Image 1 (cartoon, rainbow, N blue to C red):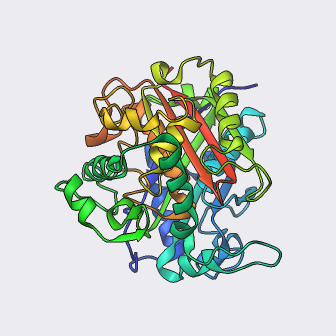
Image 2 (image 1 turned 90 degrees about the vertical axis):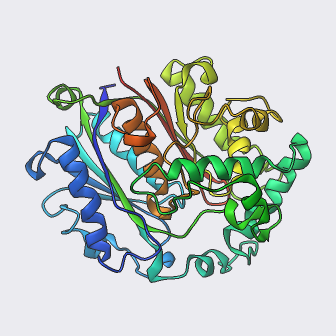
Length: 382
């Protein structure tokens, strides 16, 4: 299979309401930055892949129809990807596959969400036919899974607050982040209102407007770049039903199997030792230790110990979410791609004030639905 690399990345400033731009303008803001960062222009783009979370989030059905021209897709192939919250990562992986298969030389991947134009809590709480009711949005759905993790791992109660403090302080270093809280403390997190036990207000993600784009190219395109690119060593995606007998919401089978396939394809035998930085999809702080275990960075029941020891901070053994992660910016459709783009930026040495020193190998991770869809990639500087 051919080699592929991230040539450039772009993202918007993420805010609660981006009333200064339309959906098309939001996407174009990220796209223009990605093209500039990659050092390419429209004639060099062969295809466009669009990622978008459920259409109900904005109440605009099939937005790819009216966005086609703004996305630069007129006269080019356009694909729409939808895998719930993981869609940003899945979109990047689909674009990578098109390049690796030799279908296209350069592919633009873009993902977005404009939550201010609808009500995601409502959209996540409706009851589609023949499905179990959720009724309390994402927080109400995932809180029992987090309580199950705490019970099984015997994690102390302050772990969630430690993750929130780390990510919000990291976000303060990221000029694009929605929430930037350099002065947040464990005490202030623990004093914030309880929303869905054990998730407090400061341990949950915001609702953001935002977009992200990446330009992915083949080896010829990568070698033509004047700057460091991020070589895509491996990608993986796995799916499982939201509900089935034996479903383990604490350690989903699809996530674990995707991680094993990813590490094997990337030639990584010890993720904790061989990965320099990880951008993990953490919408509620307690997900960090859970996903550290699901990804194989720690044995089951031990992920929280990496958090407590400070190993997931910048400067630790495995910095996690130096961008601030989903806890600081959550345009749902773009959140997965932001994780993938940050991983690329880290190994390209272009992460600015949240750059992890000497980062050469990085993980981008996303999940969506009821821990149903998982997408990941590993990128490196060589």
